[in-house]
Image (tube, rainbow, N blue to C red):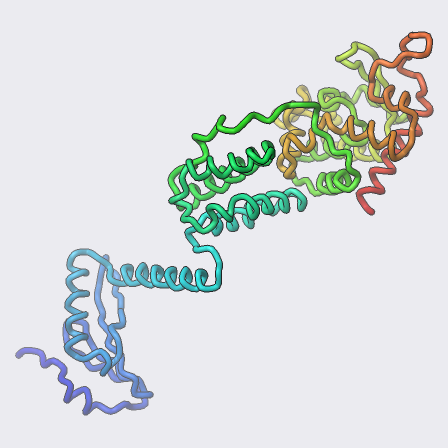
Length: 410
């Protein structure tokens, strides 16, 4: 005997009760009547061995005939191996995206597929460990030179030609270094977009060499006290290796050449005399660096970890201390902290010390030049030896370290 199907008459005749009532129409379709008399069409189906249920609307807004039509279409999808619930989830997400996009446009915010939206997401996720000053400058450049041109453009539709025109416009106003920085920032944003599936390639790659090269001059250094203070504080926030962290903290205090610092040996340190004696490779002469109490303290912190080896700052690849750290380790650490090569270098600490010791702390230039291991001659043209003005230099180095400490905590 054929199974009886539902009718509108039977549905209207069924009254709600204290419990759910289920009126079946066959093939998994049924009407669920709730205690509050709301009436929901449901259909049960099985796909990939899993039993699932979907809603097809409410009665009488969705009529019996409409419910049967929807149920038939759904059963056809299942027969073809298509999961209707998965299709519905995708459609729901797309609808939500459109709603969000429309609302963002209404209130003047960039669409979620725009360059600016992706740039903001990249900035919030990838720039948080950078120095505040660096983050402010990067975002200011984006707001001033990039977002007005391509901010609301779909990131997948930004072309190489558009980016070229953008950075060339910056270059034409004489800001060559800024143009290079902007191009590097855009490249980072596009690489992030590749990783997150927004685009398939970094469109800035083909622009390599398109801008006027930045002229290389002296080693970049910070001599502005406010900026130098920020640098010292930023160094304290470094979260890399213990060895690199110690070297970064010591570098401004001793202001020796980077190669001399990274190849420093424990055997050259006299903790009792508070001195570091080594051969200056550039001039092949002996040099003495008086060590302040701050530098001694950092060395004592590091000694239990690297004191068993030859080098104070060994390479991470040779934990036994037989090789010094890489010549790019400290420079890479400064980049990680957000400082570009045209802002500061490890060698630049020498220029910083020379300037501030002279102009701010008022030490005699010849004391400073001696401590920089420069070739200095007396009035008769004779070269001073390594111990010349050593007592005065010792006082100067302690005052310098005290000044750096004061700057950090002001």
